[in-house]
Length: 290
Image (cartoon, rainbow, N blue to C red; front, side, top):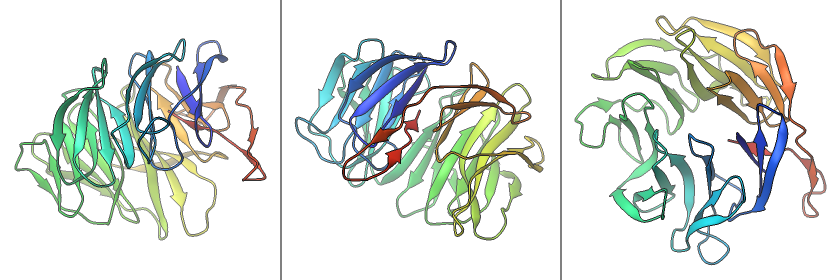
């Protein structure tokens, strides 16, 4: 399943096997941050808004019916939502205040971590990468392994079974050993560019990402980083502005609905994502995906 959201509120569920839309429902989603998350089973979808209250906060929905499972009206300024690797919990990262780990079933707070800008969890070990707001990064909430900060913000993190890679705004991509934080290799993009998104592909033990020249605003490029050495290769150009990797089907999904193979960039199908006209925008907008 893939969740596709428009500028705000409306979320659509698409079946990647049949390429058909299976549901559409209204949510708390508001523009900004990464406020749309789909659990690993494809059964739950979480959304967030900047403001709290009846039409805001953080809420969780059944993807088949759109039925709201729970709603936390008290949660405000949420910038990031991420389901845990097992799907039983949901990380909720606000702009200010503590990051909260919520129970996916009822939305209750299970844990709170302070001073975080973002949090990433390994799907293989449950290990955590913590992006601190003002200090160096950490591996694990109780670990003393510090990762030096090289830029003002992390763009994305991807875990393999034994390592992880980090991309920072305007900075390099570093590959680190999971257990020690020792740097294994580093890739430095060309001037005025960085890698916006990162994924790990088990089938070839390589990392993939979205390369973007941010000063020119040019279209993005799907690239491959060899898992052991970091050797950089371009796979194909992209005409989209948001992308996600579906691990089970081994395909990249773009905001214009295109499904692409990671190894060769070959088109493998298309979802009929509709354009939607917003009166205050005056133009058609493509959906965001997760």
